[in-house]
Image (tube, rainbow, N blue to C red; front, side, top):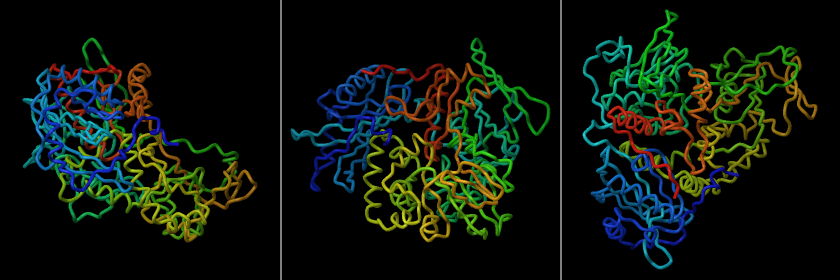
Length: 589
C-alpha cells in the first residue's frame, strides 16, 4: 500500500459544467485572499507553502488548520497586492470525472525580507453551491531589490576555462559539493543572485556523472523535461530520450555558456564547522596534489537522485566457488566482452532492464532477470503523454516546473494515478503478456511513491518489456537464490540457473545523511537528520529546506526537482547573507 494514502486528501467529485464562467469565479476570489476565513475553504482543503510565508516547505490539511496558518503567516508577512494573472484561469478535468478551476495570482509581502510571490488556487463547488478553495499553493518567487534567481545572462568570453575568475579564492559564501544537475543548477542560481560560490566535483570533466555510466544509459523522460536552468539546454537536434552522451554534452556546453565556477577533479576529504565563526573549513584533494583548504559560510551537498553508495548485493552463500564474474550495476559499462556467455541480472527496476536489454543485444547465450518482488511497469509513452502537457517546446520550463512541482504530494499522487491507471486499463494484453512470461507485474502502480519514498524500484518501459513478453529475456520470479555454485546459482527450491556473469542492479543508498556523516562526522549528521522519504505532513525530509544545521542544505531527487528547487536553496542562502533570513513558521494549528 502506498505511503501517500496516510495523508488526508481526495480528488473532488462534484462535476463542473462546461458552461461555467471560470474567470468570473476567480475574479470574485481576488479581494478575499488577504483575509481568508475557514468558510473560504473546502473541509478537506490543503495548503502547500513553498518558502513564501513559512520560510520552508509545509503542507497543512483541513479548512481549520489551513485557515489558522494562513491568517498567522499572512499577517506576519504583511501580504498585499493580490492580482489575478491574465490567462491563468482554466478548468482542469481528469479522466475519471474530477474537475476544478485553477487560477494563478501574484502577490507581495511587506515584512522583512520583502518578497514577490505566487499563489495558485484550485476552486471547487461545495454542496451549498459556493465556490471554495480545495488546494492553495504559495511560492516564493523573488527577494525584492535583488537579482532574478531565474535569469542568468550567458558570457561572451571565457576568462579561464570553466572558472569565473574565482579560481584562486580560498573563501566562498557557499560551496556546492557535487557537479551533477542538482549541483550545477544550484551554482547557476547562486551566480544569478550575486553569491560567491564554487561547485566541487570529483570527476575530471563536466558531465562525467553521465558519461561514465553504462553505454545504454539514457533518460526515460522526454527531452523537454531534461533542461538545466535559464535556457532550453537540449534543442530539437537531440534525441527525444536523451542518451548519457547527450546529457554530458549538454551539461558541458551549459557550464561554458554561463561560465559556472566549477573545480573538477576535486575530492572533498573532510570538513569541520566552527559555530562561533559560522564557518565551514573543507580539506580538498585535487588531482593527487597536496591537500588544499578552503572555507565557506554555507554548504550545499548535491548528492544526486539516489545517492552515490551502491546497495550491497544479497549475501548468497559460497561466493568463492563461483568461477564467473559478479559486479554491481554501478561498475557495469558494457556487456560486449560477455558475448556467448550466460548473463543474469538481479533486480527488475530501470537499470536492471537496461542491463538485460544490453546483454541481449550483445549476443549473450542467455539473459535472465531474477525478480525479487512485484514491479511497477510504467510505459514511457504514458508518462510522456502526461509530462508533455507541461514540458513542451512552447511552454517555458520555469512555468512547467511551477505548475508541476508545487502540487501537494498527496494530490499529485491521486492525479497521476487517475490518469496513468486509466491508460493502463485500456492495454490489458500489454501487462498480461508479461505475467505469462513469469514477470510479476504491477500495472496500477504509484509513480509518486517510487519517486518520493523508494527513489526508484519501477521500470519506465522504453522497450525491454516486449522482449520479456516474447521470451527473449527470461525471468525467474518464483524463487530466490541462496548460494553460488561453480557455474551459476542454486535457488531455494533447489533449481539451478547457469551464469557466467551476474550483475546486481540492487540500487543505491538514498539517505544522504550517510554522506554527511562521512564528510563532517556523526554530530553534523545527527543535526541534519535523515534525507528523503516523507515527514508527517507529506513533505520530503531534509530536502531543499532548512535542516537541523544552520548552514547546510541537501539537494537531489529527480531532474525536475534538481532544477526547480535549486532556486529556493539559492534564495534561502541569499536571504541569510543579506542578514534577513526567511522567517520560519513551525506551528501546526
